Image (cartoon, rainbow, N blue to C red; front, side, top):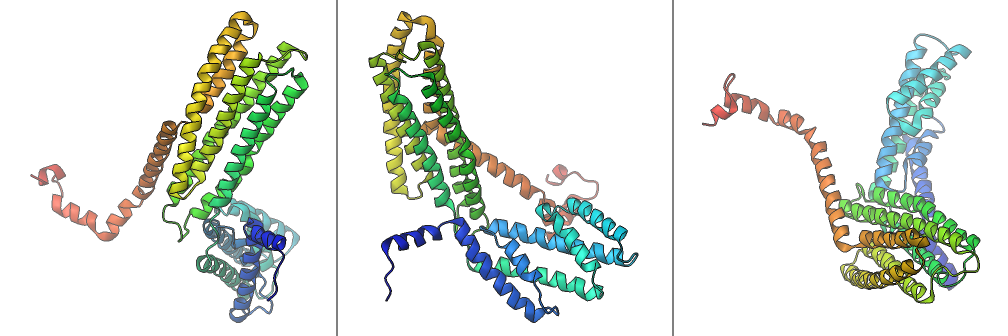
Length: 420
């Protein structure tokens, strides 16, 4: 038995969790299987449309696979029908080729094939340029259906990973980066701070704000992996917990950027040789920002933890951090009030610092969190009811309930009167 080095084993395990690695392996296997099936069912000597379709269809999640399959098949069928219609009227020439490309691109926009609009024109051109139009056209449709079917079955039999853990790690990493930035800011509150150094912290806060887009992309992938996944029974709740958690952290990151802006303005007022705050105020603010950063990390762990015991521990830590932060906040408020009375020229910036800290603590509050989550659940349930209500009339018609209701109430008799 060959033993792999521990570093190589860790690298393999880490790579197995990367979406790129998983997507590469799954797409390769699905494309190979679809080509093997197409060689038996299609009359084409090299039915490459089937593996091409499988490559495009097999996505990282079941939901994206189903969505891509429908769009891909729709684009090919529309392109084939356009080519057959044009071949019955005109042959292949430079002006007919341009006309068919124009028609395919326009029709592709109307049939909602999204990113496969170009595929409509490609299918139409390939079919228009062959001699045996009918057989080539339907062989291309058959190969496309084979590739799409293999891709769908592959994802149903071998369900892709659920990327909740990856999204959770991204959310926790965002919270830890925010905490580290708060600690870096706190270290400079009691010393002379040049404007350039304060501006550097502001740039770090802006980069942290930009990193939210990457976390949002990881979360969207996790949300898609929960849809139509047979291994997930409460996908809606998991999606809302992660989404509302990221929304809260996004607000906190924006507030941190505003806090960095206020401290940069304060550094401009103080000058390069003067401290931002007196030593006692700086110590209180450092302790306050430490608790705020710890609360952000505890909040991120709470919203990304799936195990109930770990979630209870995270909730306990968050409660403790918030309580300690509020105590520190009141202490700092009293010290800042004395500082403003002695030096009133910067009272707006001192007040803004407290207001920004209050906003972060309010966003991380557990009651605020529960209320926000319940609002999102109610909004999702209302949206689902409205979605299913569109098909309620059709279901009643198919069951014959509408006819029975009419016969029960009579042709000219009100329903309320019939119930007396």
